[in-house]
Image (tube, rainbow, N blue to C red):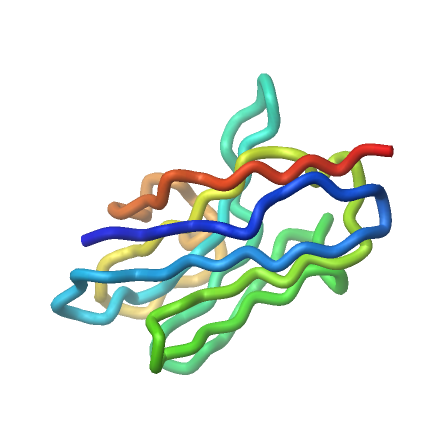
Length: 128
């Protein structure tokens, strides 16, 4: 199983980036795919997730209305479109998947310990 994250870069405040996470090697569809981020000196935090069964999504409050997560099942790719970027969005962004299972709410799906496969991370820097 492999998750390949890409799309990071350096942008000015107000700019946009689109991150991609390509999954390979799965024998069963994960319950959900999420994007996490980790800023320097801070803990990793969940940013957004999308459920594989019905494409329902959720976001943390600080990115609501600016970020959009989506999924292309034909290419096994999950995207995170990030707009109106702010300096506080700076960090390494990781994609991750959680195993198939029963329905889980947002309280669980923003937890790092719910995810068993992780990509390598892609750096996003927002600075003027």
